[in-house]
Amino acid sequence: MSKKTKLELTWIGKDERPKLEPRILIEDPAKSYHAAARQLDADIFDNMLIHGDNLLALRALESDPRICGQVKCIFIDPPYNTGSAFEHYDDGLEHSIWLSMMRDRLEIIKRLLSDDGSLWIAIDDNEGHYLRVLCDEIFGRGRFVANVVWQNRYSRSNDAIISLSHNHVLVYASNPDVWKRIRNRLTRSAEQEKQYKNPDNDPRGPWRAIPWDAPNLRPNLSYKILTPSGKIRLPPEGRCWSRTEDQWLEIVDSGLAYFGKAGDGAPSFKQFLNEASAIVPNTWWPHEEVGHTDEAKKEMHGLYGKDNAFDTPKPERLLQRIVHIATNPGDLVLDSFAGSGTTGAVAHKMGRRWIMVELGDHCDTHILPRMKKVIDGADKGGVTDATGWKGGGGFRYYDLASSLLEQDRYGNWVISKEYRPEMLAEAMCKHLGFTYAPSQHADEYWNHGSSTEKDFIYVTTQQLTHDACRKISEDVGPERSLLVCCKAFNADPDKFENLTLVKIPSSILTKCEWGRDDYSLNIANLPLADQEDDEPSAVSAKRSRKSKASPDAKLSLFDTLGSGEE
Image (tube, rainbow, N blue to C red):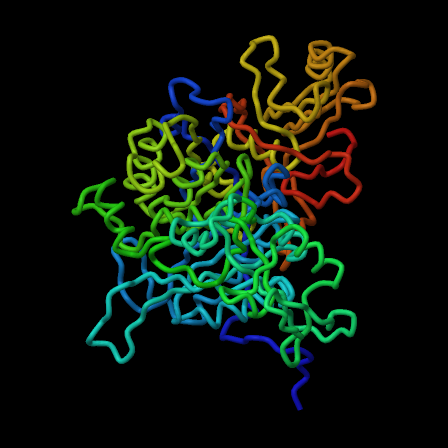
């Protein structure tokens, strides 16, 4: 008999996990872009465009406390695994590989979401139902919100067995009960407002009749109602009135009661257009409301021309609705399958912060020029007019740094020779929990980053003598503390109250094991070896940190070997 204790989706290779080592994000200032002047007080300049593998990028974002657990809305439009070959994607992944690919990313995405955040996944029927079960397994069935059906096509395909007219958008929330209270409703369209009329010329304006009965069976809600014609009305069979008799009499006294044109119809009450609340979103999104694939392609043609358009774009109106429901101005939106950059473009126009990740060349050929047009106010298409967007803001462009580790001829993991000193300095800051921000002042050579106004870090590949440590201690001063990460030291650390000395071993691992859940590195038996005597140089990038004194901090790539003399 099977020992399985729960219902789950299985596939070949499900138990295999990728070995992920920490990577850092390095800003490319030449590709970062900002408006020349601030347009509005709400302009946002620190958005992030990341070029690189999205699994490694998500892992890097997860280690940043400013981002992990802070993302209000995540929209992803992953490859649909249709078996077709697209110019920008290899979309023909075998099903089990596709499921593993999605599983590994969704597990990190879950940790990135805020407590009141939501995940939206665009998908079609090829993998949509498998994805639903996979998401139930990762997030829990109780966090499923809805399967939105988007009418992505309005024409009929005569050569199909049954012509497809829709795609799915699966919606999950970190806490559905909380999310229900904070999610935004939709404004009424002109077509929906036509439901409100004014046949009796009520001075309060257009209205519509709302039935008074409800699907309940409660004795105190089954009273008699007298119509203007003298007819007595009782609730329909199997139903009752929606509120108490006293509440109905208040409706009558306020002139809101309505019984149809003849005055003896079923009781209802007037709901005036100017008092009606916004609309609760539903699961049917017709193309008239959120656009279709042809509309999206026309938006691409307007941005890039017909010869350089993206193959599988989403219309901006679709993303506008998602961002509107899920966020408010200033909230953080993430898209780790950025494609042509529609999510970032719409989020930017709507005053939200955004992060986009894209591996392909179109990060540079499509997303980069598109976002520049948005920032310059030169993008006149999509939802520009609807949002009143005039331009402004900016973003920082990041590349994933090359791997910190490589294997030597003996199979040991060592620091890669291609890893530049400034990258090592930033990695030290990131993994020890400091914000990497090297000082530009020559007399603050020791300042490569900080955690507080008085807590700093210095990274050097030199061997430090006692005299060198004394000089550093004097330069730092008694009012500040400094964590010194060096190749080796020949000094008594207890002699310097403002210094903490740790060693950076060149040969990092003889054995490593990546944790299945959090991918943290477990390190043991770290041998000592020599390193190049290079000083870290300043590179402008900022990372956030957790307190290095945290008692439950996980063993990182650069944990000290000990506190004794070298």
